[in-house]
Length: 192
Image 1 (cartoon, rainbow, N blue to C red):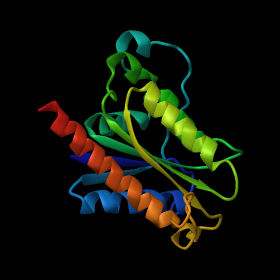
Image 2 (cartoon, rainbow, N blue to C red):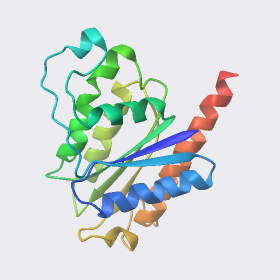
Image 3 (cartoon, rainbow, N blue to C red):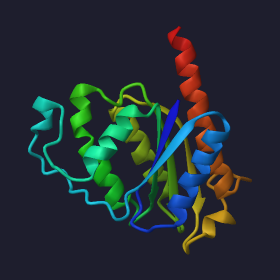
């Protein structure tokens, strides 16, 4: 089983990366092979709306997204992590979601398990979590879990609170990693 974590933050070493790393460590502890992609520093262009992928199943834009597409196809579970920017996903997260338009026809993400992690300073975490769930649903993925961490400065999530009462941000991240592995295992057992 392979779980891919995609850090949709422009900041290296920030709170979103910390949350995704914690989720992947928990997934690894539960038996998954894990891999993390940092979008920071990647050359990924936005979707240009050409709709060529609706015919070919492949995005015509040649940039770093092709490698991420391949990693997504090989993964059994995908954890998307994004900071909240103006009550929305980051631009990097939006680009990744838009550029998977090519997968709608081929159904490359269908049946995979999705986990969502959101980092907010104060507000917007709930609606951003909902946006990630909507993306997973549009791709016909199974939604395993979502988690929220609150923090502003790098590292704040290590001691910050989570979105659920009584849980820390790190607790929520780890729960997402474990839930993704659990759901992948449940779906695999159901196939037999």
